[in-house]
Length: 142
Image 1 (cartoon, rainbow, N blue to C red):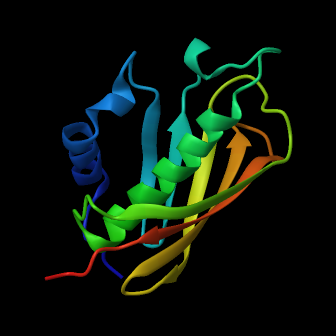
Image 2 (image 1 turned 90 degrees about the horizontal axis):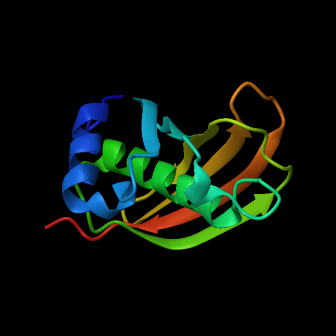
Image 3 (image 1 turned 180 degrees about the vertical axis):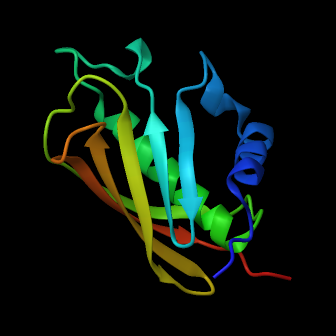
């Protein structure tokens, strides 16, 4: 199974179409992409912390959504108008210090909808910090 876009191509598309995700400095990184799955990294800094020193829920949601978008682009090609139609996240444990890793897998790939799941862990830890599922709508190909 071949990818339609490799890691460098997805990174370039994100930089071109969504430069705002890097405002204040780059913090989201693609660790790797292979067929039907990817791993994203959040190098959390002060922007991502909530009172108590833990990483905020919105930061974890962004990691999950971005991981979903990355694997979908890799699978279907540069379809920038693929959009999130739903995102459900369960926060399971307080993140430890350091990077968060979002491991994303495609569960179902249809012509118009793609469903993924994302497991989020603190780097070096086995326990899940959060688990998300997302559905993306893919515009019809003309």
